[in-house]
Every structure is written in C-alpha cells, then in structure tokens.
Image 1 (cartoon, rainbow, N blue to C red):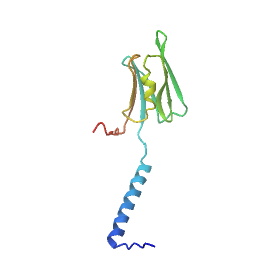
Image 2: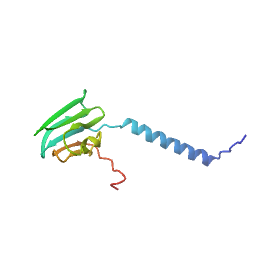
Image 3: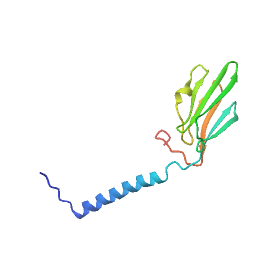
Image 4: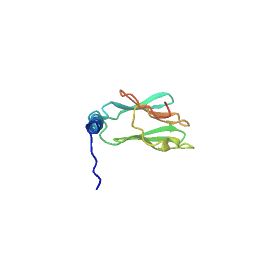
Length: 130
C-alpha cells in the first residue's frame, strides 16, 4: 500500500484548484444564457420576420413562398433555428443545421434568404477567428 504524505504547500495548492473549479462552474451555472436572442429572417435584403427566441413557447414554422415554385421552410424552437426544407440546387442552408448563438447565421444564396441571431450578448470567438 502506497501512502502519500501531503505537505502544507500541496494541500494549499489542492484547495486553490478546487475552489477555482467550483467557482468557474458555479458562475457558469448562475449566469448561463441570460441574453435576449432574436432570429431575424430577411428575404432579398429586406427584413421578413423577427422571432424572439427567449419568449418562444411552441415550435414555430415559417413557410416563405419565393415564387416560381420555390419556397423555404424555417423552424424555430427551444433548440434554435434551422431550415427544414428548401427548393434550391445545393441545399447548403439545410446542411448548416441549428443555430442558437448570437452572431451565427444561415444563408441560402440561390433564394437570397438570410437568417441570423442577434442579441445583447458578446458572441464567442472560435479558434478560427483568433
């Protein structure tokens, strides 16, 4: 059986690391996602609709008829916003998936539709942007 002898410095270091970890997760839990978020949908450069994601109680589906047999279906729910169906050649907007953070966007270039999340929180910087 191996017995480790802890010195005063080891105990102090262990306590500092433990307090820092508890503080980090405690603050993250207390201040999680308090920002107001709004999904803004624009078609041909003009605002089409705004959806307040914080006050959204049920799933909302927006069907936009773009003419000439083209359309786009946008779904907003408690997870975020995504394009569920679209008539266009590449369907990249569907493959983008769910967006739910300020600064994220979905763009359908062939149909000139843009969906982005705006709000009062500071967007997170990813590793690519640094």
